[in-house]
Amino acid sequence: MDANELIQRYANGEIDFSGLELKGINLFSADLVSINLIQTDLRSTTVQLRLKVL
Image (cartoon, one colour):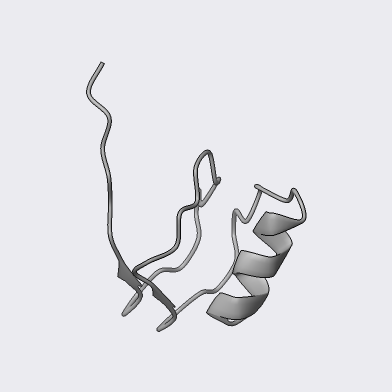
């Protein structure tokens, strides 16, 4: 899956992307609140994390 497909699926309401292979995609400017990436392969993926401290 490439970044555009992930962002489109997320925009359509999908949030569970667990266990996928997302190696090397660029999600740097994507705003993906509540996305589930458990056991997802993110090697060489570009992301920007925004952490909310409670």
